[in-house]
Length: 420
Image (cartoon, rainbow, N blue to C red; front, side):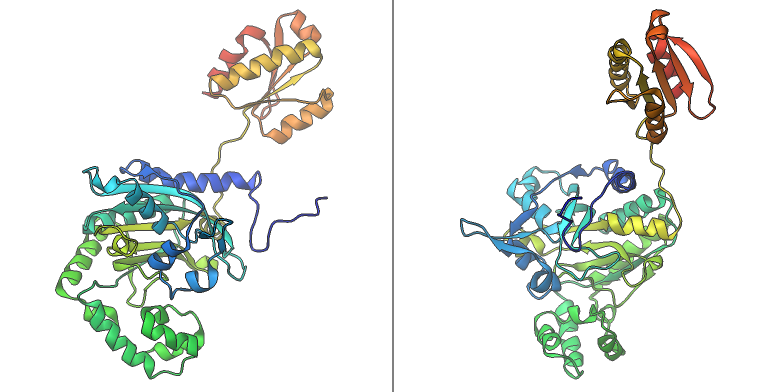
């Protein structure tokens, strides 16, 4: 046994469970690929300042959860705690916004890192699939992303998730609300760290999950009562477009999310079967983020959906993800000549797109057939010296148990026909 273990708060994805994670990633990405989103991949670490400016210096992510370190060259870097700031930085650096086709629509998949107290559904290393539409202020974009996420979840069979929706206003109406909220919060009995947040970003106090804080927030002013006419009209159009698409949602006036860059539309996907860690994904509009990190004004919107959380949601609903068998055909050679012939046939099968595997290690028939059963293969091809002398191999249907002799040169065409 190895003396090393995965770091605390992390996990290894290993077969066969890893197949479900791959299927979830593919299901989330599938509707994005057919909606004009191109794939982007960014480094696993970025400048600390990128996240401090973009995510927000007062957020738990930056102040408590970010893995930050200094390189030998003196650069201050951080493992990425979220994807939006990195994707926007990459788009700006590559001048994608200058190509003349806005919005720039991108999707990504990868690992993210936050130093948190490990618990079920919350890890220090986690996987997300995300989507960003950069450079356009249009309620239809906000609605599109919410609809695509709903489509992805439903394609997996999920039904018991809820979509929470709110508007956080803009630079015109949010300052008025911010002042009213600050006045309300300053009258509460809060600890020093929370009181400091009142001055930096009072909306973050509304996102505090502690019961002692939540109890005192009853009667707090709601942002929806302070929205300007433009924000009200924008939000109403988002609501109308989602409703017209047949996507159910719940208005949640207290939804603020945990990052500073959100403006106007904000939303969250929750699954009550996950307990306290009920969020499976979320996102919103971030019209000022580009300017925060030194770029031009580029109104944008996006989301990130947790692969780990989605897998847990599937388990909560008792849904088994339909994944293809890793092996359709398993070859069992008996003798050196059979090894040469069947290895060549396995290579041919793979070239025509049939998942095929081979009995390695010169096992006997009994041991090789055990491996064939474990592989989940639908068919097993067995050949010995006598079979090859007659120009045939034995093809066994592992479901019915039926076995028939097939010509060596016919085996690829026969399996193509049987497996469709």
